[in-house]
Image 1: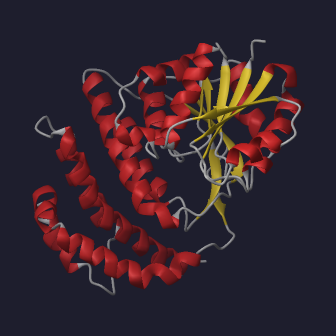
Image 2 (image 1 turned 120 degrees about the horizontal axis):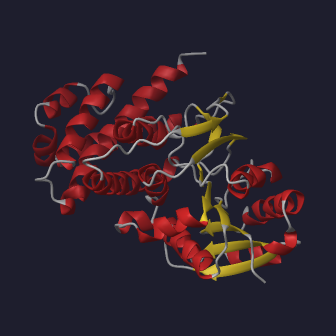
Image 3 (image 1 turned 120 degrees about the vertical axis):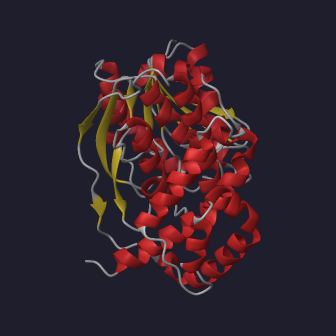
Length: 359
């Protein structure tokens, strides 16, 4: 049978939640589309918690397929796109396997505009907690706006809808190691814009998933490395043309008002750790930040920090200008992002403290 729709679930150690997500997808496919021509695919990175059994044991009306893939979310998505290309599946979506808030309606919002030819790419909006989505708010969204002139509020959405033309385009684009990991989402968003695909931003409502605080460093390094690499490539390709592409927004980026700030207790120890990180990289800080390295030193300590939005903007401007220069060697991207890492985390802590005092 030739499938018309496939939904991909990348996973690693999601035995506890993947059953719920799979059931919601099954209900959405059955309600809005044809169960007989739809497929749910779990791309699992050899989870030791036996995510495979949890997925396959979930009863569905829609066909299911388990694919064992290599390590990393990006690897899982790339393998899924390749599978869909080989099987000529015209409409697909990918959904994180750790969601608590997914509903059957999400499937319609991610896929129906593709079927109706209203969009080639779906980049959804969510209501996010003000203490969450830190890489999105402090790094990814400003970077995308600076390159494309578009206010993409969720460039690291996690959930995406793809036409066949779009996912095949993604398969052809250059990738670095970080793209195979958490850097995949920014890679998707930037290529949707650079490739001038018609983009739709539907509102999915609240997004509740696993807290990302405890792997924030790893995630930031992979996202920032992927973002710099893909935007360098795009700028080089499009240096003589306009890369801007209009986005159709069907909702707004709301704030989830439910309080969620359990990591506040971690701030004192985190400040000490970041202070040490920054001092250890002093030579690199001076090389890549110039005079800003001294300004930052005056705004940090083991107990306090003040990286306001103006200073953070200056840091990003100086770093990215260097990264986009002809003299910059892409092999130095690891060093640059390690310089950025503690400053980014200080910026996030400064932001947390600012917004905590506001109603």
